[in-house]
Length: 334
Ligand code: CP
Image 1 (tube, rainbow, N blue to C red):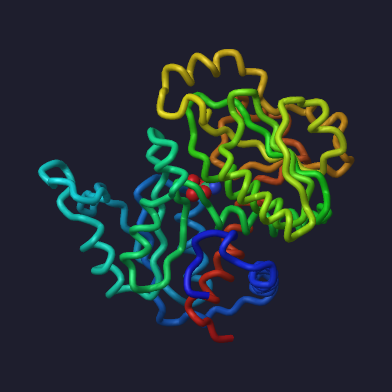
Image 2 (cartoon, protein in one colour):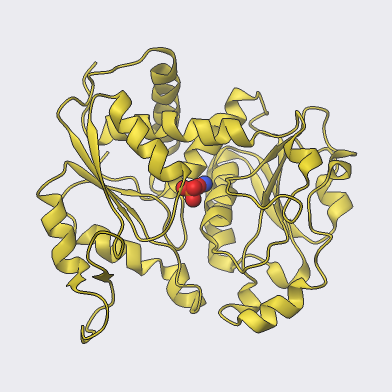
């Protein structure tokens, strides 16, 4: 494996091998597998899980990591092409990334969506250009349109909980004070489709996922035997579901227009996932969220504090699957 940018770049056998390796590493530590190897972590945006779990993953395999947060103890970095750099940014990623690549064996990059231009965010070119400038293996730590570490950890969590590979998986839009990126919904809908699940995207009318996001998931479903559809009919979507994955995202119809989006959301406060959403679900149905989550806006305390909630296991699985990714990328030895 030369890079880890998206689960959509891996064939089913490669995903299965990563999941098997993650489970093996969870059961049998390999504290010297990456001895002497260094991982660079470049975070343009905040994090709790990704930052801590990548560092923990590297350390548990015997390697070490360097964390850089541009603009906070590190020069503010420019990412745009052709710009006159007479503003805050002192350095361009075109120099910074090749420089860092000389110090490390792999580089993880987090660079969220701009949130103003839907076509640009769907192209995911910001992360792609930085990765292209990097001569060592790169890991996507959440770009404009993908979050493969989250998706792989979620796949392992579904497996750990015994949720059937062909079970019903509802990705539900949820309320939130801010318009959020499409990266997690895009990654998760693809993951569940690639796992072979009956994927239902439940969302209000103005929140249909962009066609390229659905098309990528449908291509995965065509290989796995799964399916992908959207609905705004909550009762129909939730009936017999084996998983409810809550996540908010910006309306593609109002993308970049915060005022219009805020008006729209005023009528959507009942999209806060509560225990009664599970009334008609399959008995073992669990609640998933990538975290961070806003309690009693996205989902109620009653759900998060109940045995339905899988969110802590999801976060823990981030570390095991990232250990597998790093092991593969850096040629870990047992
Ligand atoms: N789920 C996730 O990526 O969490 P962080 O933003 O805290 O890294």
